[in-house]
Image 1 (cartoon, one colour):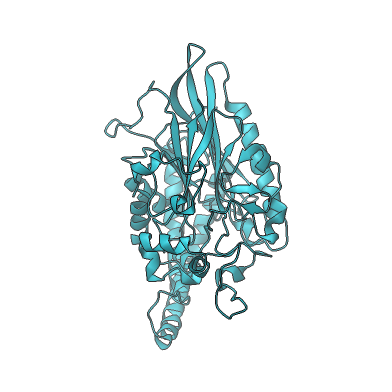
Image 2 (image 1 turned 180 degrees about the vertical axis):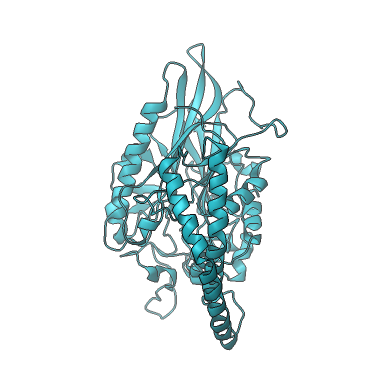
Length: 477
């Protein structure tokens, strides 16, 4: 498989056609999203109810009229977009790598490091209406704040081996991130937002993959992409993307799937011979709110099979050695909730080690949840990472801001549910309290590395409805 090319297309003519489709569809999509967002009241909105109703009654009809004006253009653009993706040779992502003017931090032929750190975060960078429905603040300024938060990295944390017993929650939950080698993000759903992130990341993470999707009438009706994003200090040797074959409900419009990458880690000495060290990083986003159907079970099994096949097909044992295979992302299931029991004993968990997992149905006692209670996203305390960290360490306060790991069924009600009070009528500490952990970083068993540190980080509190997680692995002696 050849290394990834910079563009989705192999011809500048196709690039021009792509740009034309964007120009034709952009006005309608943005006006419709903006108009609809005026009818959604987020908890951070200080507008009075009469003003909100007036805004909805005025801006709604105005946006509807403007959208109607641009409707013919969006129809032409969509048809052109469908034809482009059907007949062109399309790579399912864009790949950014250093130019001569922007040298890479990675040097060709350098020695393979002994330690690697990964971070995963769902950041929800989407159209305004989707952000409003999820009770997230809108605006391009949020991209800057998210990037700044993710880049608030403390190198001293990398010296911590906080998974060594006795493991303590106060060492695991931090207000910053360690120095990270590879960042994987989910729900970067707009190309323009991805380009903004790359501008912030480029000095530290010169290798980026964005706008990941296979657009077709069978995968997503040529509608919404996967939102998967990767930023790496190491060059990407190969990459591919597979949409999930099994989806349901609104999932037919979204290209949920699996981004698989192979990274060049440098030179290793094996049995007195120099070989290339390579690492595999997989970024996934499974479907949420699938109801009673076992969508996640099918999707996670497909992840296991796709990763195994990808490594088998791309690894050259003659001159390469696999240092690690890491899978991360928004799994949309936790290891404790009874409603997720069907995903807790899959073969994936036998082949990959989750440092936070004790066994099927039980997490390590020091873990915390990563899925916010969305109605509390705009509480001022979340904007102060140190204070939010202290909240997560408290078994009662944590329940107020993070979902409990006692979910019986994934429904849209989870977006607005409050913690259930105890017999006293007050919120009390419970075993599952504030511990719905759906963002994962897991490591393949039997590779050259072992997990030595794990973090839950409050660096982007209030900016997303998920909390970032980070994992450090070290080469075995």
